[in-house]
Amino acid sequence: MSYFTTPKRLIALLMLITSLATFTSGFAMTIKIATVAPDGTAWMKNMRAAAKEISEKTAGRVKLKFYPGGVMGNDKSVMKKIRLGQLQGGALTGGSLAVTYPDMQIYSLPMVFKNYDEIDYVRPIIDPLLKQGMKKKGFTILGISEGGFAYLMSNSTIINIADLKKHKLWIPEDDILNEALFRKMGVHPLTLSLADVYTGLQTGLIDTIGATTTGALAFQWHTRIRSITDVPLLYLVGVLVVDNKRFNKINAADQKVVIDVVQKTFAAMDKINRQDNEKARQALIKMGTEFVRPEDSEIAYWKRFADEVIQETGKKAASPELYQKLKDLLAEQRSQTNK
Image (cartoon, rainbow, N blue to C red; front, side, top):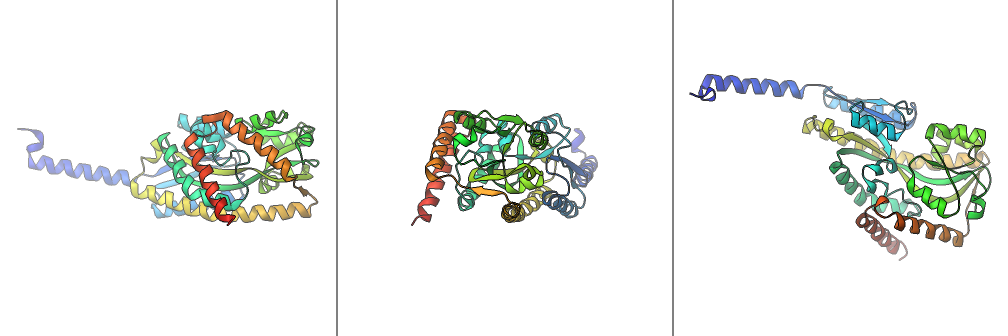
């Protein structure tokens, strides 16, 4: 007679399975997440509030633990630590995730967007596609947060490529696209980690950066900046990702709580970040920082360089399918705006 054909033993086995399931569902899961965002910033305050809400709604079964201020290293270091299991997630730039999934830098392609209206039109369609793609690469995107437009900022006026060639330009590490763009323009940028930018500006190693207005204030870079070229270079996003292997250990109901809370928080932060970027712009103007706009012909000249670099970089920039979809969406939005 089989072990499982004995009714009492079958009942005992079922009871054991039930008790194990109950124990597992009540097991606390801590997800360790690193970010370069300094502690005390609005981003960290919002994320800590989200973590508290998640813990409460899951009765403590899911906890988010943050390591802010770059204490776990740059984005590359964070990704390495996730692979090693030392961390389970990170709040990273879209561009830094391009090594894992090139389409993640679709928003930061140089000079693709002209204004926020275009961003608002494409994101509801592009964001879900990015989440699907990252899922296949082993990561769950909990949320995508707007950083804002990055602009050229320098210690003197830059309104054309000739001006730019006179300066010592910084670009982030592993920023392949923008390095290619500036080299095509005849500019040779320096790559530094985020933590070294302020020192670089102080010592004169660099005198020109690309940053959002809020970023310039948050990292104190504005103290070395006198002029901002008022043309959006690229659109920056922050992406909160967690390792699928870790996230999939959470039961489905709790997973939904985590995603819903983070997405709600990110949607609120998008509005706040946009307002903060405008407030930062006004603050910079009051401090005496000039905002200068090149002539349309010069902007078109820069745009041609950017388009060439995107085409030459090919799949390393973004998949042809997604890039074409983005261009179609932008053409659609612009045609409606110009009616």
